[in-house]
Amino acid sequence: MTVVLRRNEKEVAVRMSASQQAAELDKKGRKASKETRQQQLIEATIDSLAKRGYAETTLADVADGAGLSRGIVNFHFESKEKLLVATLQYMAEEYSQHWHQALERAGESAAARLWSLVAADFDRKICTKRKLAAWCAFWGEAKSRPTYQVLCGANDKHYQEIFIGLCRELKEEGRYGFDPDAMALCLCAMLEGLWLRLMMGEGLTREKALAASIDFIVSVFPAHFNHSGPRENGSGGR
Amino acid sequence: MTVVLRRNEKEVAVRMSASQQAAELDKKGRKASKETRQQQLIEATIDSLAKRGYAETTLADVADGAGLSRGIVNFHFESKEKLLVATLQYMAEEYSQHWHQALERAGESAAARLWSLVAADFDRKICTKRKLAAWCAFWGEAKSRPTYQVLCGANDKHYQEIFIGLCRELKEEGRYGFDPDAMALCLCAMLEGLWLRLMMGEGLTREKALAASIDFIVSVFPAHFNHSGPRENGSGGR
DNA sequence: AGAGACTTGCTGAATACTCATTCAATATCT
DNA sequence: AGATATTGAATGAGTATTCAGCAAGTCTCT
Figure 1 (cartoon, rainbow over the protein chains, first blue to last red):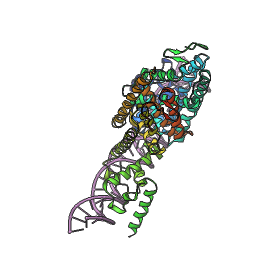
Figure 2: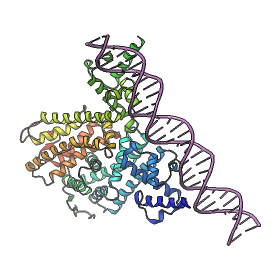
Figure 3: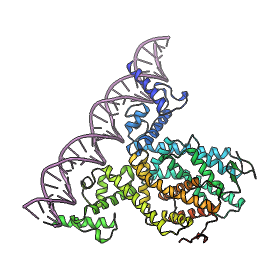
Figure 4: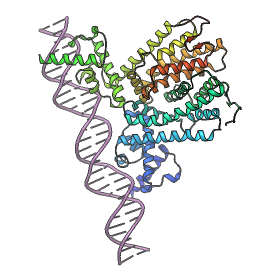
């Protein structure tokens, strides 16, 4: 009896801190499916990474954050390492889906697509201080961990190829002077750099970062964009 | 006697791996001054950060890398934490000096100064895979460690202000349409993002990164630059 | 429908291990 | 003969991992 009571307290703690998923997911007691529990633990891991950094993230901290017991992580994931890999995979997956959606929603024109991609990078859903901090924690370890590097790199390569394609199209249309591949690299690097600065604090906000990115795009592709969006030449996006 | 022999072996190991300082610095035996030893340990720390990442860097690893005994770090620095802070300070100092020198060497014109700053960021001396990896390791922990954040941020703020000043001047001269502060942000973020990508590997080289940056500058400030440098209007830099 | 047997998710104390830190002993220098 | 730098074994704190046991749910048989 007393045990049941304690569990309920824990569930409440979870709902408030780690995951704000809809009610469908947090069935009380042991009912929660394997997948739900795992996701709950992943969310708690992101919390811990953001709050304490990679080096200080302990399994005890993750378990506490999820309102579960100490042994839980080794039960659902096999080891700390595997939990972290799963967490990175989860974030990479989410990010990838997000920009794919942005592409689908955008118009046909290269300009509209580029605009949409850039805007997506600073969307509330993706660009949280919490998640940026977690990303950065992984970046910091990536060089010495092939697994992380692969997980970061796989999507990233695809992402950059999209940018290269779009920059080439825009160059054709606008007869710009730059090397489109180099400019795509600049764009990608700038977006990542802005993320880094957002995470560091220093008064930069999502809105300012997006505004700066737009300034950049407008300057580099003057025939295609003004500050309110892609110009209306081909098919109008947004 | 046998001990003396062993020490010599260690010295050799040090000279080959961690520090390639001139012969003046690596006097054999215990002669080495306090400062020299500290610098030697800092170099070994950077090595370890680059090779094993922040989380896996241990004092034993640092001591081994420097070819010295286990207790050495706590003798010269008081704790692991202080060693790491000293290492970050060292790198920040080096970086700061480097771009200050670049500014001094550049001509008077804003264009020449900007060009020089950008080129400096990809200089062999600063832009080593080893050092980039160490920087990134610190970035990854910075969010949860106020000390690191301050050390990274102090220079960075100054650095960005220089860029803001230069972008404003260039805008005046060239009557460009962008917001100069935003463009300075874009430039700084892009340079950092390129560093990040350099560190990650994926076939990006210093030369390519510099070439891309130049493409960027030429596109954004067409009145001031072409691909071989600042145009000769005001005073010619470089 | 209800009692027991079985399955599965979960717990938390015990274990084993890593690593920062200490310090008495030692080597080297002046 | 000090003074100083260095060593490396011992210590202890912290933490990942293990696992025997427990409890919530599910199935089965009468």
